[in-house]
Amino acid sequence: MFTPADRQLLREALVEAARSDERVTGAALTGSAALDAEDAWSDIDLAFAVTGEPEPVLADFTTRMYGEHGAVHHMDVVFERTVFRVFLLANTLQVDLAFWPEADFGATTPKFRLLFGTPRDRPQSPPPDARRLIDLAWLHALHARSSIGRGRGWQAEYMIGRVREYALALACLRHGVPAVEGRGLDQLPADVTSPFEATLVRGLGDVGRAFHAVTELLVGEISRVDADLARRLGPLLLS
Image (tube, rainbow, N blue to C red; front, side, top):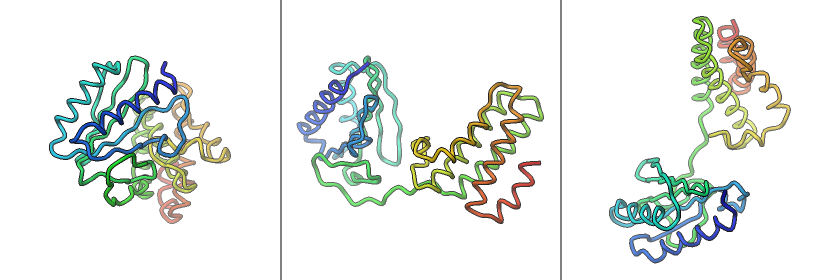
């Protein structure tokens, strides 16, 4: 297990490598470190602005991570023109290095603290759309119901989980906390989250009860966004 000191030393080394590379024209802290909110479990999140083709810079940093810093595996997540290369180190530290085209380098969320370079003005990433969450929720609720009817317990459990995910995301939007990847769930009031404990599936024989619990809570969340839609969907989902 890594220590905060291990994390800090590696982050400093990576930032220094970026400063020394003429192809890297900017760097920023992203993630929890940008908000001074790190804890013992936080990973390293860095964004680099790259001039020219990003592949050579990606390759060189990847070689450095494996050769000098104990990487054992990595994966890529691509968003628009930015490559997020995510490394897993032997000490279990996760290192997320984002390689941005120079023209795209700038804050899209509050989790961006410039270290060097000139950022571009970027539109802020919007929160999820409530109507989209509602539509995904009722769709998965129908699949949960049909899975139960077909005796497909594992599929039903999966679908119930998705309904719960979308219903809780609606609650996060309502309370003004992050609504993606479960990041705001532990910031919700207990009187919001406690009823959702009844939606947890305790075994494959429990899917019917859990389904009823989650659909009731979903309809309640829908009603706070669109009462008329809740009146129309409620009888169908709860039947």
